[in-house]
Image (tube, rainbow, N blue to C red; front, side):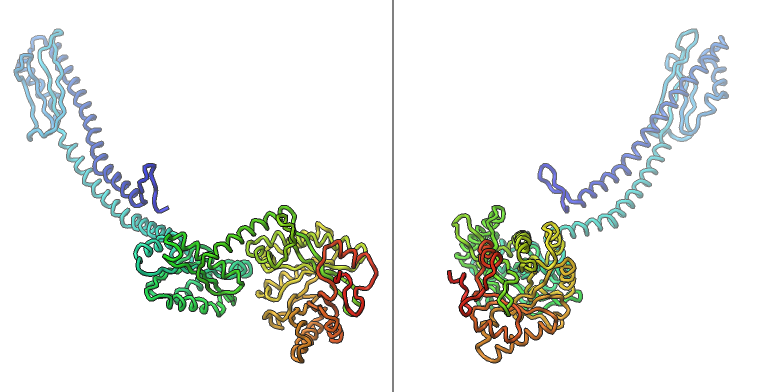
Length: 624
């Protein structure tokens, strides 16, 4: 917006346009208006002179006709015209002359002062007996018009000068500030006041051209889970987080280093490594450590970590865009480890990123081609080993290989790409249809569905769940939604969504309890129906008394809060019996069954009356 570009490619600023307007105004006021005034009055005076000359010549002609004895040379005519209005009306600026046909001057009345120039004049014929006997000549000075024109010029000059001064003083100053602001906004980020992407690329190009003898490091920095902050706390808090993050990064670099914001939650730092990799390591660690403590923004405590990817010039490229892309690749490689930190680019990372891009495209096709399927793992009442429900677990039947792909190989990519939202809706809808079909045989059967953090933070998550339940006509309590402890970082938003889910008839389970950092006070305020003991505690319960006490504490806590306790990862009969002795009501694990397709689950546990366990805890079907 700071520049207007003509069709010839020339740039015209707002200031230049105003200067042209000022020049036009000055020209109109100082030249056009006085000149117009002068020529209009010149035309008017010329018309008056022509009219007076003709009228007076006709008047003299009439007098000659009334007095046939007179001649234009007679003294009587001279006395007549002297005393008559023909010459009485003449003022100091006019000259009136009567001449004979032979050119001899008969009478003349000149102005008192020398006739000024320019003049307008007219010569009219005087006739007698249809014969021209002389001429009446009138001339009028334009001095008065000239004086008035000069006065108008001076007034116009003064007025235009004042107007130009006012435009320069008030308008142009504002326009210059506007242009400077627009130019600044074209190069700098409005929110953080950091250089934007265009300025980052130009600065990197300058450094690459200048620093031929030393390494140039490009840091690509991404704020982890920033979208969750925006969705949970609002964009106002997100903006404050971005500004605070920029301040923290700036405190970690040297004066000669360059910090910019690419877009969203992505930042760039440019370093000149004159002393080798020592500065690289120090600044990388300093940036990661700077984000180890939470930020307090608009009254909210926000824990934000960063992932950093680093590319070096000329080792990893000599073009600005190429280096930024490779630093981005290194950042993505570090992010795929699920740990914040930093990583330097390596060519092998490109292959990994290409694989993930290809995987993302295949997953999108898999959703369109309906290649996903649900397997079900029984949820068991431990007292009598009766199947009371199932947990729905997603699998991918890859059409390219025909193999069944484990969720460990694609769930993270679904979450990173955002495909987890439509896939999660498909899982919920499929589970709803399945549970309503199985409830015809087992009226109290329910299916548990896992929800990812990426789904839960969506602003319309509850509305989406309610819509699916209505469409599939699901009975209350038939669906149980499982949330992990790490998802519940915003107490106010979480409690609101959980209350809405309970209102529409959904059961709630807290998965992997004990692996996160939720306080007991917060847990007490959340309306969960089921608390699930993580498999890592079950696996260690026979290792010692301390490990066993963890299980005892979780069971006591769950019962104290009015929740049902379910233990995951039960693989041994001795584990099952110990959990029964401790008061755990429900369980799931390989002891009972691995996740199996819907048809197998129905044949084994819905459409039959045989006991789940046989021969001391060995699962018959699991051994086949």
